[in-house]
Length: 141
Image 1 (cartoon, rainbow, N blue to C red):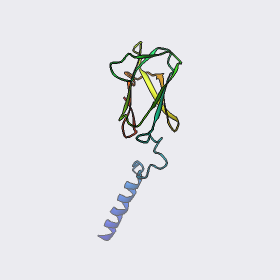
Image 2 (tube, one colour; image 1 turned 90 degrees about the horizontal axis):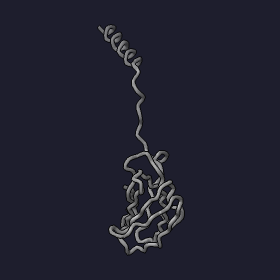
Image 3 (cartoon, rainbow, N blue to C red; image 1 turned 180 degrees about the vertical axis):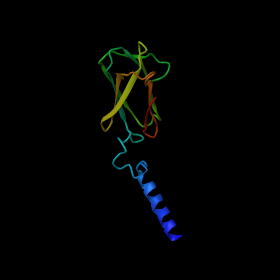
Image 4 (cartoon, rainbow, N blue to C red; image 1 turned 135 degrees about the vertical axis):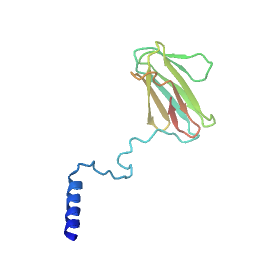
């Protein structure tokens, strides 16, 4: 009886060991694979907004809804004066005059500057607005 049980156990072990199961993945911290830290400013910090049109088309910007849009020529760079911390949030709407989709690439070249570069993209409808929230986070929609 014990010989049959031992033989069955050995056979089952060999069978299970020969089946190709995917390797087990262990959970870990993201210390080495988290990606870049999202851009954020300190709440109340003065921010200079710099926009660059790296598209072949005219891009229009609107900081406050209902105002006349600002026209940004191809390869043109524009700086807005620093916003103080008393303004709870800042928004910027933008669109390509021809209706082509845009990609907004944000960077922080120095402590108090937010740079937004507009680039052409194949993703439709593309990015259309930028929001700097009162807590310092930046959202691209």
